[in-house]
Amino acid sequence: MTVLKPRLTTIGRSAAPTQRRSSERTWARQYRARLFITDTAIILASTLCAMFLRFGLDDTGTQFAGYRTDYFTLSMLIAATWMFALAVNHSRDPRVVGVGVAEYKRVVNASALTFGLLAIVFLVAKVDIARGYFVLALPLGVVGVLTSRWLWRQWLIRQRMFDHYLSRALVVGGFSDVDYVVRQIHNKSGAAYHVVGASLDTGKRKGAKKDAAMKKRIAAPDREVPVVSDLEGVADAAARLGVDTVIVAGQSLTGGDFVRTLAWKLEGTATELVLASRLTDVAGPRIHFRPVEGLPLIHVEIPQFEGGKHVLKRAFDFFASGLALALLSPVFLAVALFVKLDDNGPVVFSQERVGRNGETFRMFKFRSMCVDAEARLAELQAKSDGNGVLFKLKDDPRVTRVGRILRKYSLDELPQLVNVFLGDMSLVGPRPPLRSEVEGYENHVHRRLYIKPGLTGMWQVNGRSDLSWEESVRLDLYYVENWSLTGDLVIMWRTVKVLTHPVGAY
Image (cartoon, rainbow, N blue to C red; front, side):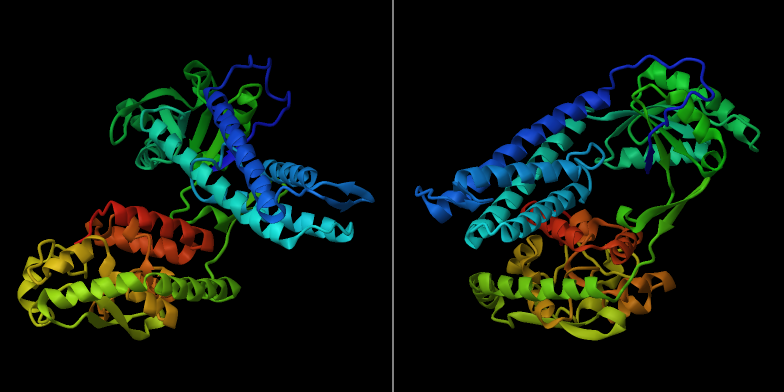
């Protein structure tokens, strides 16, 4: 969605509407204040902690701009610069807090910018500041701020479950467009909007008046949204309902003078104007605006499957999987022992899977089924609970006693870290398919093979085996075209949460 602020102009309006207090601005201001307090406390604590760990209580100080300056003063300077960078990067902007990864990206970018600039300033000013101090303060502060932001987000999500801390929204457009936007908002827990009304197009468009006459309410999954006006009465309806946001849905409305006229009518109020786009499964970072005089253009980046970003992903996979293999070696030994003692069969099961660009590789897992599981597959095909080309059986008789526990907590997947280390797989990516599954793919589904399959992915953090085939494909294709390293970290974090509260694992 694109947010437009109404321009301040006197054309087309007789009198400025009375300013009103916005419910969105009230809760947003309170929430930003809480973030500011916790950010300040964490940054001060991290810089002071780094100072004491590095220098102890002997604060002899150093030379700065020709004056003797103690390390406490330098720490306060670093903390103030850090807080300023967070503010300049709009890390507490209401449009990014509480949803998506943009908030976390801005925190990381602001922190990196702070220490990069300070390092240059201290070098030029010949300030003898210990590198160890920087090395301690930066990770302590970043991890602390990100953790606090995540905790506040969980609190905000819980509040929104009770219809608190939501922006009151009025959706405008033709019936089908309004219905689509309303359903999308209600289906997304992080949408941050509470739709209180709809304004339908009753103009000359074919079928518009019929829609308006027959549809008095828009049916959402858990409630009905009343139709409160036609297009001419949007501004009055927004004032009457006290909405924070007017959402315009439909290309027919955004292509003419309607948006400009509506913006004029909303001037002087606290109401925001938002344009809803049907750019399906395109992530925000791929969308850019290239304004041409009188013609605002939306530029959508074409997905790239080669280049530096993919090299960085491979480097992260290599080092992270190597570290995980070293740290989890005791877990590997324990699981291997339990698998062996269960039925005295092989510990590791390997199977041919299809990887990037259709290349095959041997994928490793801890064996969770009986040794003759492959031979018994044909007799169970008719009982499949799977979807599409996938075979899944909720109560598969081939699964061993230990295997049920391993599958529930995905411990059987741990040997795939070896595949990640070797470069056959990635830590995050689409589910690695069998050759028989790939042979049953429709043409567009082959796009799943444009990047390496993953140890975890969007399918695992969104329901796993409970997903339909269509939804599994949609999630995988969305990831293939929109992935980012920050998004990978978020998925990995969500995977840890899913493993502690397993859903759809069998």
